[in-house]
Image (tube, rainbow, N blue to C red; front, side):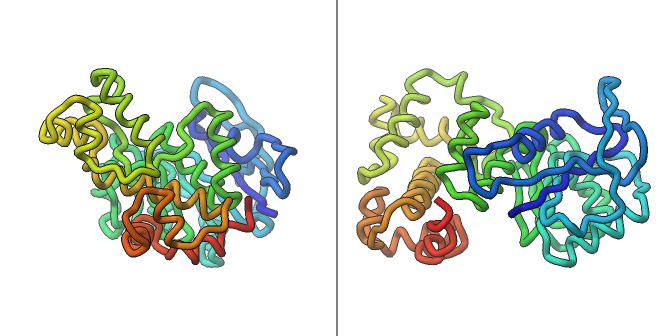
Amino acid sequence: MQKVAILAYDQLAMFEFSCALELFALPRPEYNDWYITDVVSFDSGLLQAIGGLQIIARQVNCLESYNLLIIPGWPTDDNSVDVQLATEICQFATQGKRIVSFCSGAFLLAQLGLLQHKQATTHWRYADLFRHRFGQVKFVENVLYTQDNNISCSAGSAAALDLGIEIIRQDFGHVIANQVARRLVISPHRSGGQAQYIETPVAKQKEIFAQTIDWAINNLHQALEVDDLACYAKMSRRSFDRRFRKALSTSPKAWLNLQRVNLAKQLLETEQLSIEQLATKVGFDNAITLRFNFNKYVGITPSQYQLQFSRQT
């Protein structure tokens, strides 16, 4: 059973806080062993939130009973941290328990020294300030989220939902994560490496471009090549490559491989397939190519992934 603490603080950012509540505190009796969540604070009394709202959280002086801590933002101009709060979060991290920061929450973790030599990110508007103040952090620019061992950081605002869905997927598998995402009316999966913002959004492209992406996702079992996508979009290969990279900040080939890996992850959780059968079902030409790309994007082999996650569906 996962016990979750959502940290509340003075001048709380309500959007990220609401994301944390929706993801981890909303009761979901249809799922076994769902999260047990408390909103906690090391401060007493009413907390002031953005917009003049006031919040009463459960006052605590330790985090020992929790194994997942969510930090939904943190003031970027405040260098002071309560001693007890700092001590408890550092001990929490030392014990290997998971810590998740949303948006500017990475500032608190960096102030406590927990991100030294670790990958981290935050909202793009705070990127320069973060790099200036925390030079020992391996700051990753323009990604939705990072995960480095037991500490995860999301970029701003809606990226918190993407990271939250990924945490749910790791705990409960693709099927449940996709169900939660659908109820939130968001994409089931946006990888952490995807860009935080797109200068020319897909919605502003001609409709055929968006249709091509949908068509490719629905036909991953075929041995699609980038030329096939360009042909479907009625574009030259050069024009398609350029517009695709501008819209999604990645190449069409890399995007195709990532979608195939995501499909492979879902199948590994729900079906018993040989590695050759799996490669065929997701459109890779052979098992070697599947293993290479799976390890590239997931960091473990397909068999290791299946052992870890198939029991959770």
